[in-house]
Each structure stands twice: as C-alpha cells, then as structure tokens.
Image (cartoon, rainbow, N blue to C red; front, side, top):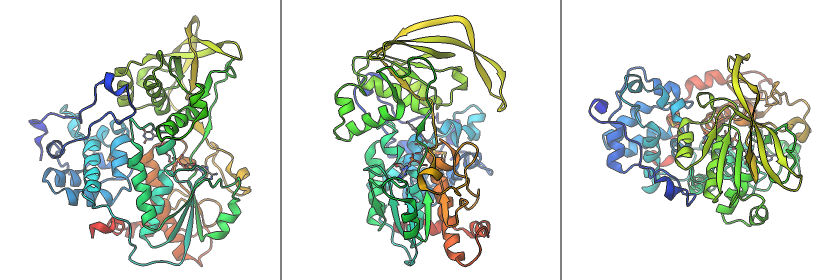
Length: 495
Ligand SMILES: Cc1cc2nc3c(=O)[nH]c(=O)nc-3n(C[C@H](O)[C@H](O)[C@H](O)COP(=O)(O)OP(=O)(O)OC[C@H]3O[C@@H](n4cnc5c(N)ncnc54)[C@H](O)[C@@H]3O)c2cc1C
Ligand code: SF4
C-alpha cells in the first residue's frame, strides 16, 4: 500500500474520440487485473477515511482497496457488496470527482486521487465473471409481502434488501423493462444495458416478482397495490420535465431530453421507435442545440454526436465552474467535438411552427448570489447571437408528478418541492405502511443516493413489519440501524 508516492494515478484506457463517436459502447475499457491491483495499492489507508464519508453509501473503501491490492478479489467483492447493491453501476457512473475521489486525502497532497470508482467496478465485474454473484437464498422466509412501485435503482435496491430478509417482494413498473433511468435515461456509452439487466435477472432468480407495464395510479389503482401488500414502497422517480419559457418553444423540432434519450435507448435495445425512424427524434444530419448544463444535457449532446449530427452545441446560462454536470462528462463531451457556450441562454426559438430554424441566444453574466448562495445569471442587454438549429433539446431538469392526485391519496404529504415527505431515518411517508425512496423523495439526484434510500427504506419497512402492533409514528428504526450488521445483507454466495 501507500504506493501513491511512486505510482502515478492511472484511469482505465478510454477509447479514442473518433472511434467512440461511431457507436454507443462504453468509452472506458475497464481495468485489467494487474492495473486494478496496482492502482488500489496507491491508497494511503488513512486512519479517518474521508473517501468513506464522501460516499453516500459509506462504502468501506480503504478496506476493499487493500484487499484488491493484495489480490484477494473475492473478499474485496464481499466487503464491497456488504454496503452496496450495485457497486459495478456506481463505479461506472457516480460523479466520483464530487464524492469519494473528491475527498481522497492523497489528492489534497497533489498526488492524484486513487481511482476508487474504476477499482470498484473491476472488483464486481470480476465477481460476475467468476460466477460468485448468485441468486439470493434468504435464511428464512417471512409471510409478509412488500409491493414496490418503480424498478429504478431505489426500487431494485430495496427489493434486494427485502428479499435477503425473506419477504415476498413484487415490483410494479409502468415501463416494459425494469431498471428505470438506468435503462431509458442513461445512455449505453456510460452504462451498458446488460450491466443493469443481469442485476434484474438475479432478483427474478431470487424470487422477486416483476410486473411490467403496470401504471400505478393509472390502470392499476394505488389502493389495489396497498390492499395486496403488508407494506408499500413508492420509488417512482421524477419525470415531469421543466420547460423552456421562450417564444417558439412549440415549434416542430423542439423536443424534451428524456423523450429524446428514451427513443435512442429503445432503438439501441432493438425496439421499433417510429419517432426515431421518421426522423423526429433522430439528430442525424441536423444542427443540434441542447439547453442545460446537467448530466442529462451531457447525455443528450453525446447521443446527438453519435447519431451523426452535423453540429452539436450546448448552451448553459452559468459558467463552466458552476455547471451541475460532472466535470468528467464535460471533458468527454468536449473530446467528442461538442461546442459549449457558457453564459448563454436561449431567448427566442426562430422559424415557423412547422419547422425550427435557429435559436436567438442572449449573453449572460453572473450577478448577485441568490438565497442558496449561488450567483444568479442575468442577461447582458444588447448582446445576442443567432445560431442555426434544426433540433433543440430541452434538458432543464425534472420535477415530481402529482402523486397524491394520481394515487387518489390526498393525505400523502409532500414537501414544498412536490417530492414525497418521508421520515429521514425510516423513509416512512405520512401514510402508515407506505414508504418512499430515491428521486421521488429527494428530487432529481444520483443513482448512488437512490441505492442509499432503497436500502434505508428496506430497513424501515423491516422495522415497520416487525413492530406490527405499535401505533403509526413509533419510530424504532434508529435503534434497529444501530444493530444493523451489513454482513447480514451479504450475497449468499459469500457465505
Ligand atoms: C439522462 C440522465 C442521466 C443521468 N446520469 C446519471 C449519472 O451519470 N450518474 C448518476 O448517478 N445518476 C444519473 N442520473 C440520475 C439517476 O438516473 C437517478 O437519480 C436515479 O435513476 C433515480 O432512481 P429512482 O429509482 O429514484 O428513479 P428512476 O430511476 O427514475 O426509476 C423510477 C421507476 O419508476 C417507474 N414509475 C414511475 N411512475 C410509476 C407509476 N405510476 N407506476 C409504476 N411505475 C412507475 C418508472 O417507470 C421507473 O422505472 C441521470 C438521470 C438522467 C435523467
Ligand atoms: S458508490 Fe460512488 S461515491 Fe461511493 S465509492 Fe463507489 S463510486 Fe465512490
């Protein structure tokens, strides 16, 4: 260990931009065994591991880095799996620069952070390759059942935890495939679909029932789900796209990011997608302008370039330093030929209702800080430029749908942002026996936080089902979490 002094930081090899623009395969090659061991050995084994504090899951990072460095990959995987349901997914798509790696001590001393995410991915990919990850066989079966609404990372992690505890678990999802945004939002060049699909298959093999095309609050009433199960988890994510409010936004050729990405992901999965085939959701041969600066905008620009757009420009109203998207993804996009226009905001979409022809862009500057302390962008009068465009993609973020209305549950309490109000430790909502997890509770966030919430909500549900007769609102979950032994959740194969 401590080889950071002599061994430089090395990330997995990245495919050349000209090559990766041609397909939707992951851009990183992944570590080879010796590379992973060597990079893990750079860890300084801090007494107080800040990387663990920087990880939402509190992963025991220095421990599995040491085991990996010593070549004990099986134990490294067992240790990693004890705190995370999908380490290979987080290793691929967590914005590590803002989380674990951003807190790495050797980074602070100028040696370059340990490549925590890449080693984490390697450890679990290797476990899959060696057949160590097996279906769950609970130590005991329990009579109660839990209904989970939403098969994204929050719902899947909760299903995994609850099945380990022996509950019968049914996951309902309105889409035809499980995985949530990991399947229909995030493109394959960041996270290939079979990485998610094998996690879903393992849950199916473990006895979890998936009911796809089940729109709860639509064709399937929420009350029916509640009636059927002893506890319910709402993990429906946030899907209401924020809109642009400029003239011309209704023009043909203006689309929302998730519709665009879903069409592309479906195409990659082999589905028939008329909106893509007819050209409406396809960037091929078009001048594309993407509005927004988060992960979704980065995924749109990089999808458009792979679809053979003539040009791709990203407009963001703040500057590079204030972009919400991961710095790594901005760099990847720049390498692939995307033009970024910082401090730029669309003012008017040009053309006719039948066909968009361009975007009038206002120059912005950063003004006084708002309530959150962030500088507010304001327009610089008289500084405008017109860009040609055939396709404008709106990637301005998401807010929650009206669940109390859709579910016919006016007593389902919401926060002022419209997300579900849940107890911060048990994740129970205002409805007894109904829990919430993931984006629908915290607002649009990250996969790793959805996993965190899914795990905590599962512990809350377990506590609720065990306390049974106690009145609603009696919270014993804090005590239960103190007693919580992560090894109890280890995959069966590790025993
Ligand atoms: C384009 C894009 C790129 C992203 N990139 C990253 C990234 O690189 N790294 C990262 O960490 N995070 C990223 N995120 C964020 C991440 O995907 C989400 O934070 C995470 O998926 C939230 O998980 P969830 O389980 O709460 O919800 P979701 O993943 O949204 O899953 C919710 C599920 O609930 C289902 N559902 C919704 N309503 C109903 C209903 N009424 N009945 C039945 N089913 C329903 C949906 O079909 C869906 O399958 C990205 C998000 C987007 C949109
Ligand atoms: S889960 Fe994310 S934040 Fe935690 S160690 Fe893995 S990559 Fe880092």
